[in-house]
Length: 141
Image 1 (cartoon, helix red, strand yellow):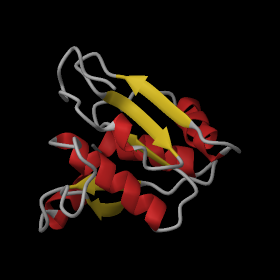
Image 2 (cartoon, rainbow, N blue to C red):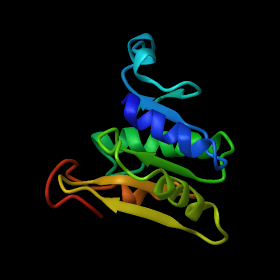
Image 3 (spheres, one colour):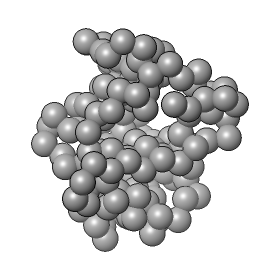
């Protein structure tokens, strides 16, 4: 996680990116702090609260994180898995910039084990999180 947050922090030094780690369950903040790059925030993403139909499992946490970031006033939100510390920093900068451009935009990077390694949106599209068998070879909308 430290490698990934360090890479995101490096991207944030060159672009208007706010680095934050979505986590669950509540109360684990202190356990995570040693593994975060300086300037990384924390966002509780426990999947609680009202969710669209069909958004289940890990999708609840991801959808909740995206929704909460957008509700907090961010123009767009990207969620990135912690397994991808080797993504080029320039790629992260571009992936964060694309959803902020005019019009409804989505950035998707499919993961080999199902789901996405990066997902960027400017609207909380429930379809991107609905009825997905996360971490399965056939994951995806």
